Amino acid sequence: MRCSAVVLAIALTSSASSAEPAGEPNRVVVDGAQELGVVSSTHSMLTVSYARRLWQQRLYAEARLGSGYAYDLLETVGLGVLEVRLGAGVVLRRDRRVEVRIGWRVGDTYLHGSLNEQPFGLHTFAIQLAPTVAVRLASSWRLRITPVAPTLYWNQTYAGSMGLEAGVEYAL
Image 1 (spheres, rainbow, N blue to C red):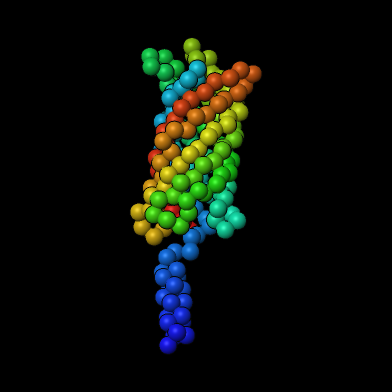
Image 2 (image 1 turned 90 degrees about the vertical axis):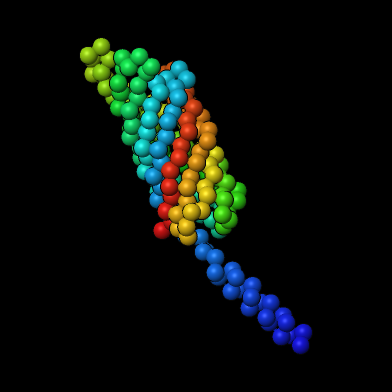
């Protein structure tokens, strides 16, 4: 009797664990972001990224490509923005309805446009802190929110911005 209870408990545990998704290591993300400039331009971005989970899905690495438009309050400067970033981070709560992640992104931000009718282009090094919350919507879909994303820019001088990101994530 005792042996059959143990076998039943193991069977129920294994079937319950197999009913939950094992967690796909590849993810594709589309984010929209609004960056408020601190000694830099304010800009809106649309970003596409690919992320890969590593080490029992507790770590992640990502590659991001984003494009957007920068502006100031007086609309006297209109700039195109192109961002290329690589990121890495830790998944603090995984395989749950709500995941909490914290990571860093580094890369290049390219600003191009014209100032007083003179064309220019400027590359800046960027480093960004990215604390993210991802809520499961369906088996492979999550809603991603990064409530505060501070970014530091450097190109012979410093600048910064504070951003908010929201988007969707699909696990492959």
